Image 1 (cartoon, rainbow, N blue to C red):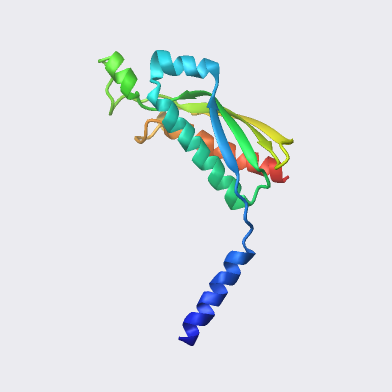
Image 2: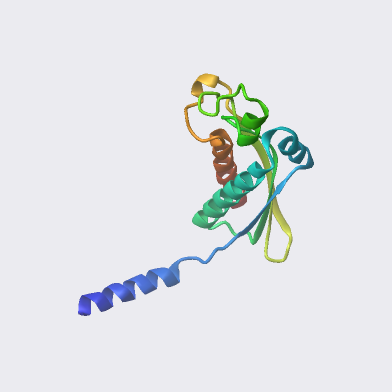
Length: 160
């Protein structure tokens, strides 16, 4: 019983000592990319991409204790590694499993403090440059790699 009490006390102390950073992340899509989604990629992909970017930025900023209250991120462009459902249905010659291409994304972000003052802005783009480096995987693998790199480098900039 005594060991359990000591363990609970130690855990409570750790939780109370941990910084309580909680950033709110809002994702947007540029007008140009919105058109690309509508005309070629498929509107349903917007939610997946936005959710992926929000999750990555939120996770990295909270893990690193970035002192930002709100972050607005914008997906300016993204290219899938595999055809999306919309592309496969529009172009029957595409193979959803074997077709692959160079992917990536362009993302911008602005961070604000609790008073609403801008504390930093960051733009990042990365696209795979060699088709041989595209491994079987998710439709948006390279875009998600871009989101991860963006979040880490933006956090570094805000902390540096």
